[in-house]
Image (cartoon, rainbow, N blue to C red; front, top):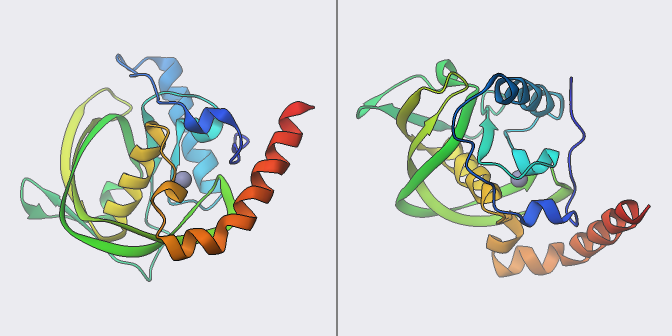
Amino acid sequence: MALPIVKYGDPVLRRKGERVGPVTDEIRDFVALMLDTMADARGVGLAAQQVGRAIQLAVVDVRGVKDRPSQLWLDGAEASVDAFMPLVLIDPVIRPTGEKVKGPEGCLSFPEIYGDVERPGEVEVSARNEQGEEYRFKAGGLLARAIQHEVDHLNGVLFIDRMDAESRTEAQPDIELLMAATRKVLRK
Ligand code: ZN
C-alpha cells in the first residue's frame, strides 16, 4: 500500500526527525509502507518526513536508474549495489568524503522540479536495518548522492536549499507555485 507523499509547503518537511531507537513491529510495518510508496512513485529514495512523520528513517533504491552509476564498498571491498537494495536507513549517521560533484536532482515532494546540486562524491554510512541490526558501508556515485539527499530530509533540509544559484533562480517560480498550492490544500 502506498502512502500519500507530502509536497513542499507542508511544515513537516522542515522538521528534524526524532531518533527511532528500538525497532518495533510498528516501525517494521512503517518501513514496508515506505518501500511500497517509494516503488509506487518510482523514486530513488524516500524519507519519513515525506509521508508526514518526523523520525530518522529513510529508504533508498537506485536499481531503477541505469544511466547514472553507483558504487558500494563493504569493509573496503567493492560489492554489488543491486544486491544491497533496497536500503533501509534507521537512525543513520553519515560522513561525506571525496571531491564535490555537481549533479541533477529531483525530489518526490517537488514534482517536476529539478536542479543541479553539488555534494561530496562519496559517503560513509552507518545505520540500522528493519531487523535493528547495525551495518556500515561506503557509497559512491548516485547512491552517495541519494543517501545525502535523504539524510538531509531527516534533518529538515531540502535539495532546494543546496541547489546551485542558477538552478534555484530558474526553479523559483515553480517552487513558489507549489508552496502556494500545498498551503491551499492544507488550509482546507
Ligand atoms: Zn527528496
